[in-house]
Length: 266
Image (tube, rainbow, N blue to C red; front, side, top):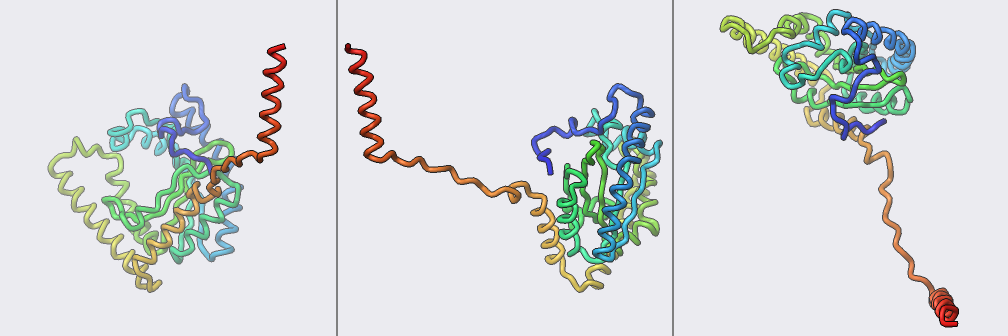
């Protein structure tokens, strides 16, 4: 794992020609995706065999990559954002039966040598966004430099996403909220409330199925964070204490100094 904590986000980019057009950058991303797909699918096959999960890969459509690079909501705070910063042109997911498998899979990912971890985001599982989507996400840098996304929802949340909630998100994803009409603002608030409530019910269903409490979920998330905590990877080295020279060594040193002085006096 590499330490990107001190690197400005603007400088974390895909290995594409920064002077190229958006379309050419996308073509370069697609080439990187094709290089990475076999390795990722092999890793996911291992994970599914080990944990009984269901995983799949997907490639973001070309026009959606360009749309995201110019999304008003992103540009509000990141006016420098471009195609080169996209981290999900190639993405893959593992649908979890149990959130307690998350730290185990994180450990497998770390030990796989498949990639470097750029960023981990597990907070959204208990602190969802305005649409209510609860997800653990790893932003990764593959060996060829491509930035990709690995996300791991639980079954119930994935079901809610597939049965309407993702369509609601897509409906508003590229709309500039600053230019909404009053009617659009009302509709947006209604849609986000419905989406949030549906995801909340899905999360409650997950807790009921697994008989877990939110505290247990939080513990699994904390375990996951610790796996990628670089301070845990290396033992803290204690500063070595200087040993005082023995009396014999000190006398030899003093004798040498005296001989030097005698030589100078001659």
